[in-house]
Length: 466
RNA sequence: GGCGACGUGGCCAAGUGGCUUAAGGCGUGGGUCUGCAAAACCUAUAUUCAUCGGUUCGAAUCCGAUCGUCGCCUCCA
Image 1 (cartoon, rainbow, N blue to C red):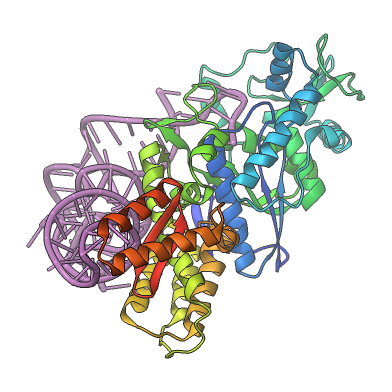
Image 2: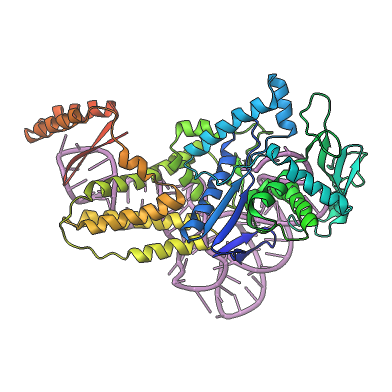
C-alpha cells in the first residue's frame, strides 16, 4: 500500500511501526462554532482512510483532538457573554451531532487541550531544560533557531520566512519566527497555573502533547488539512522532536481544500457553508460520494450542482441495493458465474494506491452496472448471487467509503400504513388490467404526492420513499 | 519577494512513459423494456489531455518556455 507523505513529497510504502496496529492522529476542530463543509471533507476523508486500514486488517487507534482553548474561543465567549466552557461544550455537542450525521465512525479518543495541561507543561519543561524554549516574563517561546530540522515538512527555509513581511512583530521574541508554547494570561482570560505563572498553552503544543499521550512518542499517521502544514504541523514536529529526540510521525497526510468559486472556503473569508446546513439539504452518502469522487489531496470546487450530481450517482447505488435486498429471498434459481474476487481486487488496487477513492468509486459503479445487467438478463437467479453482491457492496461502499448506508436501506419503510399502500397498488393493477390508464395514473400520482414512488417491473410493482 | 500545487469531454474527475487513439459520475441525443412513466440496460457523445518547442522507437504522462488558476509564508481543515 502506498501513502503520499508530505514529509518526503512522495508516495511511500506504508509500514506501520507495530503491525497490525496503526496509530493515527487527525487535527480536529476548534470548538467555537459549527464546522463548515470544507472541514467536513477533511474529517470524512480521514474517516475513509481509517476504515480502509481496518478493511486491510489493521487495528487502528484513531485520535481526533478538540481544541478548546484558544484566542478565537475567548473572543467569541466574550462577545456572547458566556464562559469559554459553556461555549466549547455547546460546540462540542454540535460537532458530535454533525459527524454522526456524516456517518463517521467515532474516534477512539477525542482528547481536549484543557484536559492535558500536565502533559503540555511537561513538554515545555523539557524544551526549557534543553535550552530550546525561553521564558520572557511568563510568555514562553520556542527558539526556532535551535532546531535543525525546522522547515522539513513545509519545505520552507528559515531565511526565506524571515524575508516574508508577514511574520508577527513581537519584541519579546529572539527571532520573529519563534512561536508561543505558553501564553501569559491577560485580565479576564481563562488561565491555568504553571511554573511560568498563570497562562494557557500555545496552539501547537496541545497536539504534540495529546498525540504523545494517546498514541506514543512516534506515531504512524498524522493528518490534517493542507493549511496546517505550516506553521501548525511544522511547529508540532519542532516541539515534539526536540523534546523526545525521536521522529514524531512517520507519515504526514494532508487534505486538499474545498473551494468556493475556486477560492478556499474559510471562516475568515466568510465564503462557507456549515456542514449541518448542507446535511439538512443532502444525504450524507451523496456528500461522501462527492468527496470520494475526487482525490483527497486535490482541491475540490464545491457547488450545489455538484452535490446534486453526486446525489444522482448515490441514487443509482441505492436503487441497486434496494433491488438486491428485495430479491434476496428468492432461494431457488440458477447459479450465475460472476467473479466477485476480481472486484475486491480492483477495489483494493485502487485504494492501495494512496487511497485513490475516485478509482475505487469507478470500480463500484462498474460493478453496479454489471450486476444490474445480470439481473435484467436473467429471469431466475439463485440467491447466492444476491448475497455475494450485497456482501461486496457492504464491505466496500458501505464499510469503507460510506457511500451506501445499508442499515438505513434495510430499515426504510414509508412512514405510512403499509397495507394501505399495498391496497392502492392492487387497485392500480386492477385499473391497469382494465386498461383504465387514467385511474392508474391518478393512483400513482397521488402516491407520489405522499412521497411514494411506484416502479413497475417484470416481477411486479414496487415502491420506495422519495 | 520566497515556496508549492494545478490546467484532461458540456460539467465534475481518474490516469502521470507502451495494457489507455484516455476510467468513472452527472448531463445530452438515439434505442430496448413499458399503456405511459420510473428504474435498469444498450448506444453515441475528447484522434485528444492549456499553448509552443524538445527528449524518446513511443508522451496526457519526462524536460524547457509561455499563458492561466489556486494555495502556503498571519488564525484557518
